[in-house]
Length: 283
Image (tube, rainbow, N blue to C red; front, top):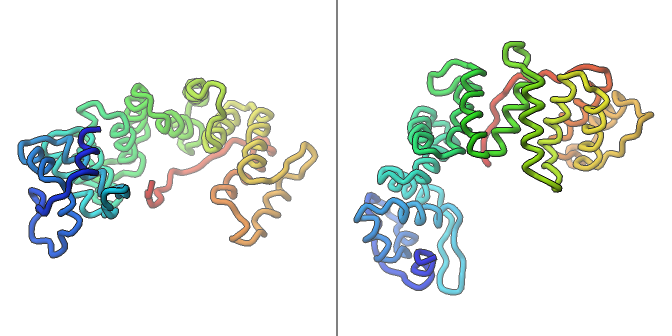
């Protein structure tokens, strides 16, 4: 709160340490001298806070700080170099999204060694996709997911259960373990509904253990609730899929192709199989 107050109340003309040779320092000039001095003294948390301000941007009655990913990355790196764990993670995450795999892995590993849960989750995908010289290895990925799960990273529960239920490689599948993991995740939401993507995962888990009626019930709920497609017991699910694919692109909802296709597969008493394919990570 003190740092935020300083940002709102003070503005100085000063270039941050470690950043030189930039022709445009207008944004940096908004950083209070007090904060620059703290960073110069080795305060990595303050450097992280500055990075977060540039990552998100700041707009209030006192001043406006534009969102700037480049400056955010520079300040997160400064924070990481000063040993602040959240700076390590944000640096690794931004490098990951820039596909600088080896550099990303370095900082994510350091964040994980310091106990950062989401860093373990991100490291799992180096083994899922075979990044930064690592071999594709589901069991190694699962060990990272487990560490993230211990630290209650919900995405780790979901993705681990999904892979255990859907991987084409039999050595990577374990439906009953997947059911245990997804049930633990569901209990974390209490009376609240899990996100649709997680309910989709639970349906895949039920199909993997041959509970196809349960899988169909859950997947029908996803298709109705998320995609807005009413499903009844007498529907021809293959026709439902055909009707959806004929929709215009503007009339489709992201992810619904897979949701509807899985419903059709479960109706045929078959589990879902899917290779893990890397997509651009902008989240």
